[in-house]
Image (cartoon, rainbow over all chains, first blue to last red; front, side):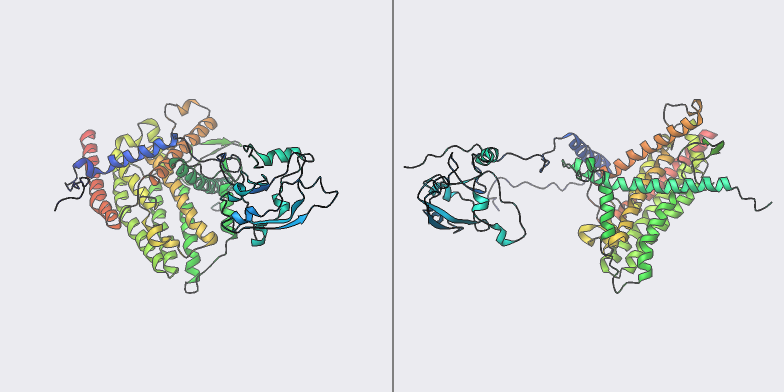
Length: 184
Length: 346
């Protein structure tokens, strides 16, 4: 029969030589191999103490953004919810009242904004859809929890810390994300 | 006065027994830790490093875990034998240490204390006797479990230990012809003045080493507990501290067989290139203990190194090696040793 490829190799069935039958030299050889691994570098990273940095394009937990004065960017337009392929985002819009200008950037805002982290596939389409730079995916992942309902994140969990009241946490949450251009 | 009991001697021996048993338990404990660490290092991993500094409290955590596990005694098992199994395994493992000379004499409180629990004149025979009793722990436990896998493991252990004890005994006879004594203490003293026995008996040592691996049920001879064929072998049905006893007795056996090998072939507590007679007696004893423990550590590392290198034998290969290679080889070794002794002493 003609071989399909020329990769086939004839297996050697010749009887073992005396040295091979002794078996001990082979064991010694094997032991030298394992011994050499004592001096090899270990690829393990001591996880909680040392963390490997995420790549700059990593898509992690969502963050609802504020502007430099600490006003929420989100206008509850719903584009993110429309863009979401997993239908993980729900929101309720509300109108900004007089005297709330320091809280919300524009006249309309999201009174309720929830993301179900069990549904979310972290595709980042919400971030792409957002015209106001109000939502982006950070470089952290969703922590484990005991109950399903704990994974529905509301504004409490999603909002970025206030830049004036808690600048340190704000900068930490902001990370070194490249600034997105807002489409006017 | 027939009943003049030397109370001081009694206390001295009692203290020695307690120290030796606890030391071997402690060493066995840390051998489990070392096993995991060595395995990890040979496989480019880090090994246990969470419990305490460098993971040093890991064996304590393991022991605690075993204590808190639910203790299950199967309904169909014979309860008495089921408990007797691990107890016997542990007992025989601890008993072997009685005749081993741990060091030379120590002078304490105006007394000269021998660092050996009992200098029996048939020391090595005693070791052999107790070690072969050890298989009963495994056999009784596996029989009492009333489980096919356990029984298979027990059968394997029994036939394996019987097969390899023969070759071990014959290689031993050659050594006894060289030393002319059965007392372990005397063997060490001889080796202090001459070369170590391994120089006279290299083949005998090799056979003894292979048989020691088989007697300890260590890889490549760990067929009695072959995890992937027999679940856990003889200790499949065991849980909690009874399982701990089985696992632990294996490590004590490993420690003891390392000590025996060091004593028989590598000069026991003899530190090479050091003249012990020139040192103060207590200092010499200390040097001796350190030397013995260093040799033991090397042997234990060797046990682990082999375990994490070589795969397990097939059962027919095991029997083939035992009966058709090691026993003829041991007989050959015995005959040539006898011939050499006759030739040189003429």
